[in-house]
Image 1 (tube, rainbow, N blue to C red):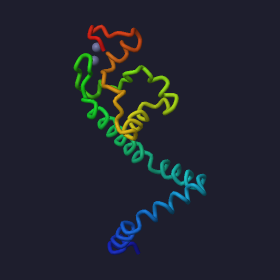
Image 2: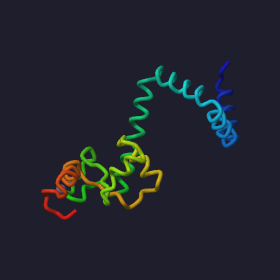
Image 3: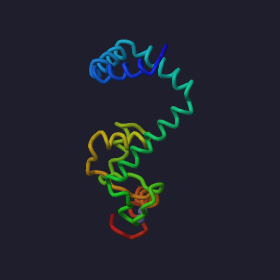
Image 4: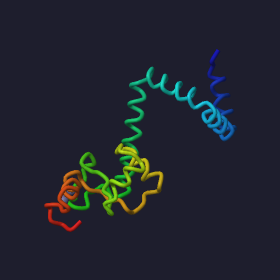
Length: 144
Ligand SMILES: [Zn+2]
Ligand SMILES: [Zn+2]
């Protein structure tokens, strides 16, 4: 039977052998990627809503972290509502970068966090970002 006591024991055991357990799991995954991916897919299928919500929250949190780090404000027009904000590549190397890290927007946020917030990014709102991308300037008239 799965009692509270047992739960507590498992927790303690996990804390004490964290590295070992992680290492074991990793090795198992490396040796049996198909099995593990099968489990994951099955779990996702059975818990679709929960998984979607979790991943949405995770992506949103990553995005917030990145926006916060770069000042959470459009450097052109000063927009601060985060729903309007996006990350801009100062050196205009966004296309090349997407080839390495993938097309998905959320991957960029994850990548920025993983690489410890490099300073080749800045925050623009979507308006200024798109104007700059399509016309090479923003009609707000500031040199950005
Ligand atoms: Zn703007
Ligand atoms: Zn602008």
